[in-house]
Image (cartoon, rainbow over all chains, first blue to last red):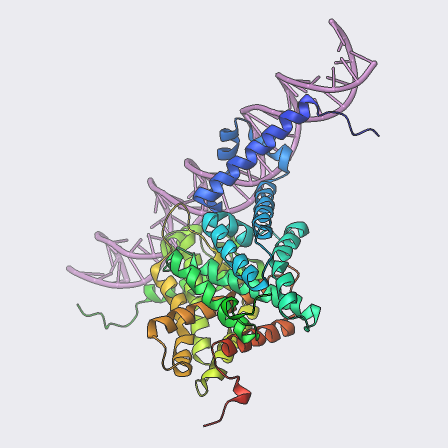
Length: 211
Length: 211
DNA sequence: GTTAATATTGAACAATGTTCACATGAGTAG
DNA sequence: CTACTCATGTGAACATTGTTCAATATTAAC
């Protein structure tokens, strides 16, 4: 089984189309929301038939889920780019980066968190796992800040703290509700983390002795 | 204009049907999720035609929004039932009650927070206002705990804190994700509030001097 | 170039939201 | 009680949108 062969013409066309469909679907979700995503709109914009979309993604949920998968991947990449020099600053940075990413891609994030499968089909495990992994990115800095704590507890704390930040941001950016001004939201998130770290017995970054 | 007249037969039938439709829709959402709600299922279960549903609610979103409105009303009633004797206990109670209510009516809460309107029609203001009012229920106890703080800041803090609790609970109960065991979730929420109150300079309930 | 394998098409189908001309039945006047 | 009026209910027809699949076109293999 020699799979090292160069990409065939077919594969190249297939790949290009696949990327094109995803790009178009992502654009529609991002600008007009998940509920405005229609198969025919996508296929027409991609210059192919509806059947091709189904050949490539199985069903329409497949398109949405692939977009969602890429959203959480992009989010994770951004979060991984947060400097890990100082653990407290890293926690602030993770929250601020999540806020920025959410503000830039609100509808994509909503698609990730709000999309439900038809009937009782399960949501793909790999996406769920990636979301959990992203939310676990607070684990490392928390371990450094609470060296004596149980690792399992830190894992739970990481998820809880990130979930809390998610709640503040997702409702704060909910334009349906009386939206909090972005700058004020940023400040609210900061104050929130401030208070919570203080409650955990961690000094704020300004007051901590430098290494 | 004498509107004090007794209810006509017509009105009684209309009201009964309206309630019946809502009850059926709520049941479907609660048990099978918003995405499984279909006009024909509702009208057949209610023993009427699809047209009647439209006469009564304008469009199908009208049914969903009415169910959502009643959900937030029920939630608010439950939250208002939390004893206001001790402000710290009240905060714990609000969070615990929210957790219980969410666990009991997960799909109804998801319908409330995740439903999006078609096109760009706005979400009804009164529902948004009721949600905000519910989230403002932490305001009173926080005022008692932080008597020197600015009232506007407390209002923001109330929303932020409740949003954080909402995030922890809604993701914690997300059966799509690796669900946190309910009992552990309860504990997590408590510890979260503990830490946060401590960070705000408020002593936990056990350590506070009783009046 | 011929053939086999594969991908693409788009018309037809299925599921579901929405409308509306007509039928029904409750109120009302005589 | 009957006849008339009009709000209300009806459900077939329509509109939109997801899905399928037999026919067609394209690529790969020889």
